[in-house]
Image (cartoon, rainbow over all chains, first blue to last red; front, side):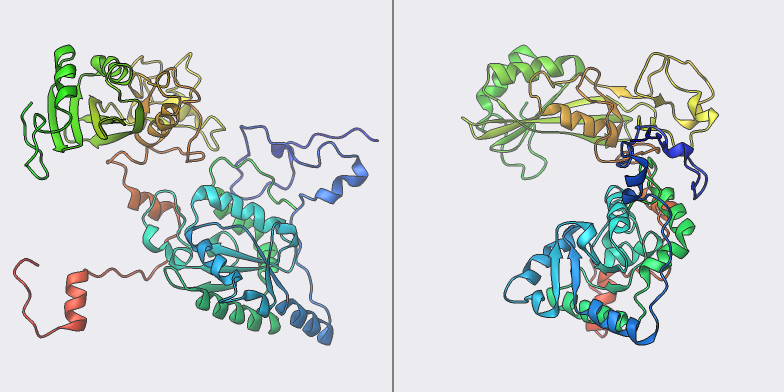
Length: 227
Length: 244
């Protein structure tokens, strides 16, 4: 076992954004105590854009992705209440190939359920980054579009697409489960057309997203990108 | 004491079920105001030095054992913060709100203990020596380093009477800038993380301006006056009602 090197956030070379350092609460990366060989299991390097497969392979992959949408069971706002009827027999999302998963690492779709406070946004970013490629975001309700009824709040973001890439917006306050299903069908069209490139967009514009996130999340105490 | 309620104007304290309690309180403490809002809800106003003795007396002798809530009202026109302690008596099924008016003080600017992300030298200049809460003065006062004037207005803590009061007090410190010395974890963040402006529930905090310069407003938002908009769309021919 080799000596574990302590990587503190202010020593990291991939600092991005406006140059501010993460200070204060000593954060502990999960890969600190691991031997060098295992360290990469918990990658905290910048995300990389992934090239699509060639031709028919990518089409087949997109068809498969569109029919197996696993959503992250993280209710981020009041709109998460609409996910419960979606699971029950009346709306039955399973017939569309949609099912909830308990952890970001098994999920491909993130539903932002309405308003996102700054405190929640921090967890949203963290969860989004932990999801595996390809990943898609459904933004639910007016609050994710322009702040909705919380547009002048001191603690609620106005537009979500400045912090993470959004594939489909579902307008309403709150949108009903039928609207959510319509949003899922729209997302499937986008995926089948090969346009569900949110994860790549995030990787390509990483500095811009990070700068925006750090503008509102003032006590930045997480890795810049976390597995 | 017989001041009538502002809301319905029908119940006086003497008629309400709080009459006995009020006599007890008035004998021992100096009340600057007392009125009944309804049969089961009364309010009294006391000075800061009487507040904690009164609350203790009501809890220990008069049966007001349940702390319903503690909150603050910013009356910036009079330069005060009004703290309200609402206590409930299960025997009487009645509440009494104890109001305490404390000076509002200057707006404190808080730097979270978890780190001042882009703290400049000027903003550090106002730190009170020997105070670990990283309390800064308002920007206008920041240059006068070492001034002993406290940045936070202060109130006595009641966490020794009800443990859950400490949570209310943490929230009030963050939202209204009232410091409760000795209250557990009073310097910890409550709901806001890394907040660096004046406390957001103070009324001179401009939440719209803050939102616009922080949260990337999406252009194209329209606002309609509901009365005008409904009239225009649903009954454009009818005359405008005189009250509108």
